[in-house]
Picture 1 (cartoon, helix red, strand yellow):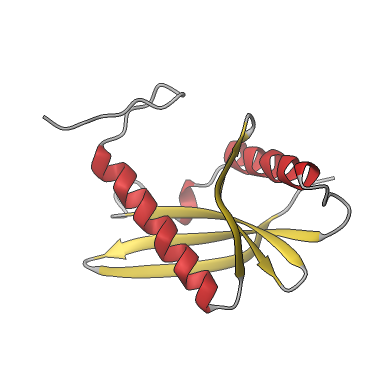
Picture 2: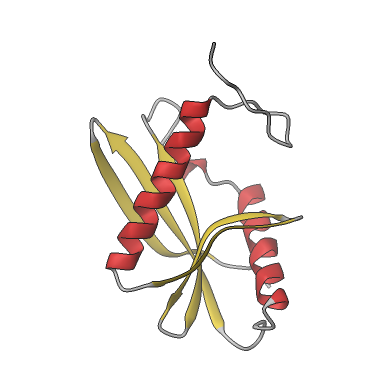
Length: 135
């Protein structure tokens, strides 16, 4: 019998689905490290939501959303980011900056790493400044 952990939102996910998500985050982190970014933290959580990876790129704090897909059956990884998710990421990033006393002290951006698994190969798209906070 397969294990189906229940998340707070009531949605169930198979263990293999969760493992795939963690693998995609690891691949994205390694990819960005090779591009010269410095890792600050992973899976930052607060009551607004979660940010997969927080890195530093020169003087910028980079909030990275990782989206992985094993197939395009339900759309690409990039297509899975909606306005609601973007709002949660922005609120969570603001919380992080406030907590670290960095709000108004640093510049930041929101990147997306979209990962599609094609056969046994990872197809990685890195979108810098994928979205921003509307003022």
